[in-house]
Length: 235
Image 1: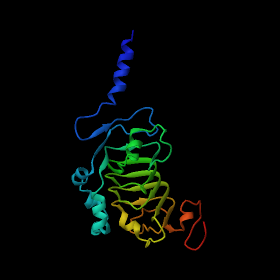
Image 2: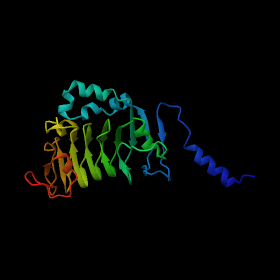
Image 3: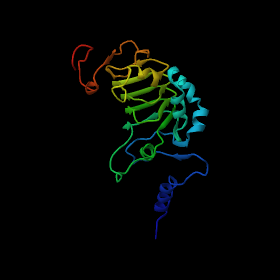
Image 4: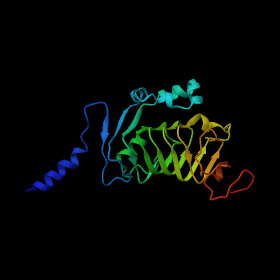
């Protein structure tokens, strides 16, 4: 005979698997997740509606907005992950690779499924944020992460961006003009990090806070070197 306590526990566990009848599917945090989801749930929504609702095209960099192909590619994204409120993760935001047999959190699985346009309606605090494999990351608050790696995808921060240990930016290949960062990255507030490394990217258009390290352009292999790096000396 099953106890009332066990019945209640099973009911609670099963509640997280119920699909909402609306277009959105909302996933709440789980204690066993490798990534600690925020108190507020996230929803996976059709990207077209999210882009329109939050006017994301207007949040692209001025250069990106002028490039028709870039805007069209952005509008072709299928789904978007939307967090309502502040987000604090104890691990990383990046494209997860590895064995298909690995048990992943709902958030990690959403990234793998291709829903890699992320909108956060609040502040983001995390260990590592890597936008290189994302369709876009839009934070309508502040960003404070240990490391921030920026790649060839739209990245917008309404407030301030703080990378506690490293801020790095990289173009996809050697054909970069050196100002790809200006096309991909927009931060309305200030930027601060004790170490800033870019490779064919360029973040000179951003407003660096007092006390932040200056951007140093390095070879690709030196992006995460311990330093010291300079324009003339090796890392």
